[in-house]
Picture 1 (cartoon, rainbow, N blue to C red):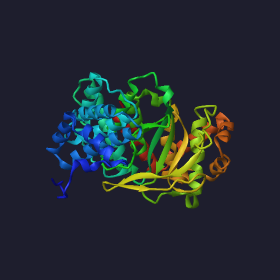
Picture 2 (cartoon, rainbow, N blue to C red):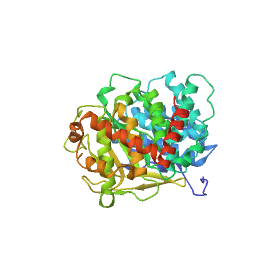
Picture 3 (spheres, helix red, strand yellow):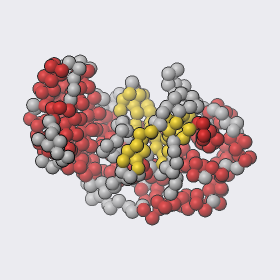
Length: 423
């Protein structure tokens, strides 16, 4: 058998085990199930490479559960469930379902028969299949996710999805603007009494454009649930968050790290970008302090504390190809995307908007404001600033946005985008 590039290929070659003989036995018992051969056969008829990806993902379930010393029957049941779920998709949506259901299974999602769950998977599969966005740049990743979530919301309500709005007239206003995203965190304990949480998280994972991506799906990582979103320009990202909350209302009150990437130059570096990074850092902290009056928590010694800023690894898309860059080193070192860990619930829009405008035109921070921001060294400093002075910072920034033609245009284009994409 050959794939689309003419390379000889065998689906069983996709899984490698530490104990080869025992592993092969477990693998074969799982893959000989009719549900598995059926799903691989279904997608193989349409696209050999698509079927190969699904085979690999199903094999990943075997590998993971084997490493956790699960019994062969438990492994077979998990793979069978994943195969049955993936059968709900069609051409473009099969590997999106397989990716999401694999993460669902290894995260502890229920394998019980659930018609509501299957209905949701089918409708999101249809939303993926009909997604008209073909991402070429980083901003397109977030646009694709909004398109999928919007279509899903219509289908789940048994409505015909509307044509996704044409946003291209507004894109020119954001030429050279950074892209922004977020990673949300909350403890597993906050959802342990909600059996439907993992179902909803799987549907959210399906909404992310994952083809060829290095970005991990949302998951349980050492009892902290990490929820990721695809990045874009700030108005799209704000709209994306609003749609994501319809699936996971928990995101409205979750801690999050705001991530910022430049699109027209190299990654951030503390060595060459310290001045602008410190501006963004101070504005992020003041944004939090403008909404809340206390620091909610401190992390463990080995974790990044709430209120910190760091540079780290990132995935960008350029001309349809992913680029993995950056290097995280603790403290003010490393390079890559900027991450501001001062997010909690309602200050999400501000953390997307204000750092974007400052990075797009750092000159809107005049010398007097810069001297003030230089004093904001930590979240404690920001909280010690009087509410009047904090409010004055953002009112001054907004006045300067209005006065600078490029930013003014982006502001109004952003309002139009968020209006067109609002749930």
